[in-house]
Length: 433
Image (cartoon, rainbow, N blue to C red; front, side, top):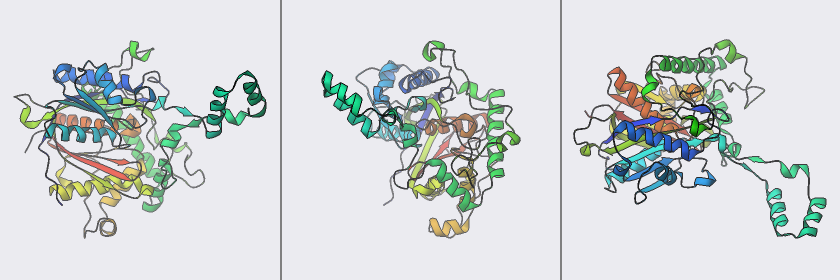
């Protein structure tokens, strides 16, 4: 059954924090504080007060234990009144986009007339876990008296007991197919015959475009500084990932990390583990009251796919969105596809342009369309900028709308692959046409 299209959603303004490689410049900043900085910056840029906000929705994947409903915590820390509501959503890598969709539905049904949607992730602070034997030991230790503790120390204490389990590693491994995200990228490299050289060239372009965007001041209007009193060290004003001196020679020296014998996916042609947050101020298009927004969200689609080939999620979601809206891939003047891995985006390009893939996977006679790489990720992508998983969906919408504005263009498309075998795609415009 066809769904009723939502009315256009206006994006009044938005900002993001700098994105920093995990365990680096933002290591001491928890997810709720990253989100607070983004929300305060977005409110300031939109020229609205915390009292004007009716609802806050934030995407987050790692779920900080000290702020389990991090969206609500961010709202309160940002000075939004306590009688306003806030919640957190998790669709893995599309969480920051899902937050926008969730807020859009809330605004459409009249829960409020102004909402904040965003994403936050401190991948530095994903906890280490104890294994089962260690948990049993510590529970027994807590219940035991002095002599019981002495006995446990003698009989049960082993070095392996104190080896922690990395929750980050668990989170980046799909429980249904047993592959981590890098291994799913290797699956696509083999399926589509994408070489190491192609991947490294794509990665180099990502860095070159990101560095150029910073140099010409594009990101100055997008990124808000995290001050030293928040970091506990030096203020952070820029992304730490883009490398001005990146080269093909340097990329070629890196060894494959997911298939050491025959693989092509390296740390250099993959996105880094990243900390960062982003926030958008949203209102229904018919509540603008004369204000000129940054742009509009017009429609979206979410699709499922094989978890072993999760990187193809954008293909399924883009096709679903085009079918839903009657638009063509060539209608979009700029496109953002999140760069989880270079091979993943390259595989999406091949799949979108393949008649065979369309017939076999999409039950249609002809290809979705040709992905023009000159219009794709024109300010660099996650390989250079980073991919704080709960945040990237919001960042894509923000960066895309700003890029369209700067270039005097109207129509944009953003998409992500999603761990677990999903894809999300969204159509944005700078002016409603």
